[in-house]
Length: 200
Image (cartoon, rainbow, N blue to C red; front, side):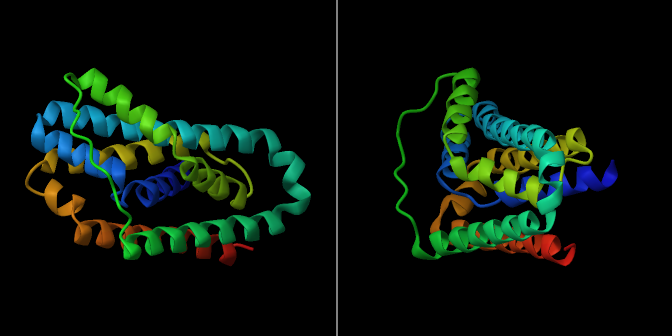
């Protein structure tokens, strides 16, 4: 239980920490409107991460027995995908992707939650990330605990961004903040990939 939960926590932080367009939106909402609206937006992002972790774990459960004969190549493939995602995250931060901010802001916490949930669900890299972790580790041991850990880690980070609002929100949404958080996330993701490789 604890191993799967901790793995989910690490995975959740790995996907949540880089502050991209969604993080900028959450920080901006909290700074421009209220902590309530920003926190609701953060929970929308965390819910999407939890949904994708659940999808990856459920899919892994279905195919776990079928992939047992090729577990080692899958572990290598999962590690390579994670390394590619780590490199892509770091490279995107170094290049400084042009993010477009929108001035429209949800009038209510519910609209903020649903809007950010929908936006985050449109990110295919998230499900690829969780699927690579689950398949690379050879199955879904403690799947519910993994999902809970991933959701709670993501929620805690998103609420930190919302809670900071205008204080740390502006820093994290700036170029330097995005670079630092993306590089930290890249290191975490690369560490997960190396962990998979060492277990081969």
